[in-house]
Every structure is written in structure tokens, then in C-alpha cells.
Amino acid sequence: MVADKPGTDRPEGAVRTEAVTVLGIDPGSRRMGWAVVERHGEQVRRLASGVIRQDARLPLVERLGVIHRESSVLLDTYAPDELAIETAFVRDNVRTALVLGQARGIPIGLAAARSVAVHEYAPALVKRHVAGSGRATKEQIRAMVLLLLGLQEALAEDEADALAIALTHARVVRMAPLLAGAGNTAASALQAAAAQPMTATRAWYAALVAGAASGRRGTRRGR
Image 1: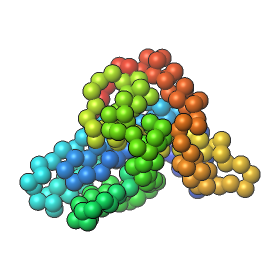
Image 2: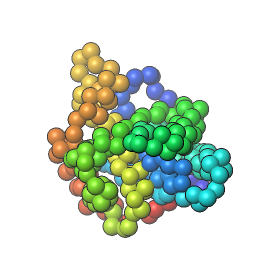
Image 3: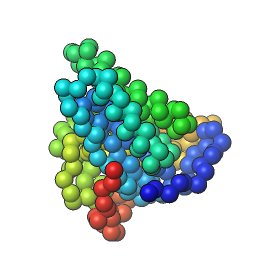
Image 4: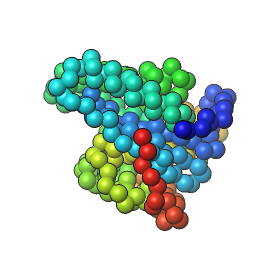
């Protein structure tokens, strides 16, 4: 049983300085990776992560129903302050893009209904933040997620992607106070932070690695 969190009402546009919980979603109609991380100051730690897997032979309507149910459970269980989700990526298959759009819309709509702020990140941007390159491979992303969070266990591909998305947003939130100068709103600061590659912020790497080394290797995966 997860205890209810205290109220987190803030003036609109205010920059957060307290602990922030982020739910990261790697959307998909057959596999949906999810991850919950908490950022407090310079520290980011994983609270829970996993993958919602479904039989591809099930009708799409049934799979969307499962996504709705499981997304509701995640939002109610972890009560995140923010939802970070990957944007739809269209290559050649329009039908696949449409299905992905339906799968993405469910957690987005559920979060909005709970007044949880929703932030979207392009796949290349997530790769650049976590691995330093917008062309990083899945294995490189997984390796960097393990390093940054001080984890030693095996991570499923979709789970690692969800953690990468959550980490990207956790960094953006942390950078906002540093970038919000005179005349800047929190929203513009977040946008500016999102545009910067992680390779330009070595201090963030150092803080996360130091935090992982201080005793977070035994973090247990939750559902």
C-alpha cells in the first residue's frame, strides 16, 4: 500500500525546489514501458519501473482497455507530479502511427484529468540527454540508465526507455531554476533546458553517479 502524498499545490509557473516525482512512459499498444523516478535537489532515484505486455493477437480495443486500466493504477499508486512521455515517431507505416497515437492518448488524458502536468519529448532528444547522442543505440541507452541510476539488474528495453524519458524530464525540471533569468518564465526555462544536450552539463552526470555510489544499488523494482 502506497501512502498518500501531501498536497503539492503551487502557483502556476512556479519553479519547484522540493522533491518531484516523474512518471515516464514509453508508449506502445503491445508493450508499454513505465518508470517512476524522484528528483530531490541533485539526486535522482528510481522508485519503480516495468513493462506492461500484451498479446499482439488481442483486438486493439482490448489492448487499449488494458492500457487505460494499468495507466490508472500507476497514476493512482505513485501520484506523480509530472508525466513525461515520448512523442509519436512516424516513419513509413501510417497505421502503426495511428495505433501508437491512440495508445499515447490514454495516459496523457488520464494524467490531464488528474491535473498532472504532461511533457512530451522526441526520441532523439531523449537519446541526446541520456547518452550524449541523438543516434544512440538501445544498448547505449540501457547502459547509461544503469550507470546514472546506479542499477546492476537487467532492464527490459521498453523499461530502460521509460527510465530514460523520466530521467530526461527530471533533468529539465532541475535545470529550470538555473536558466530562469530576469524576464524568463518557468515554462521558457524548461524549454531552454530541453534544447541543451546532456554532454554540456557534466555536473548533472557527476551528481547522479555520486548519488548512485552512496548506496542506491539495492533499489527494488516495484509495480
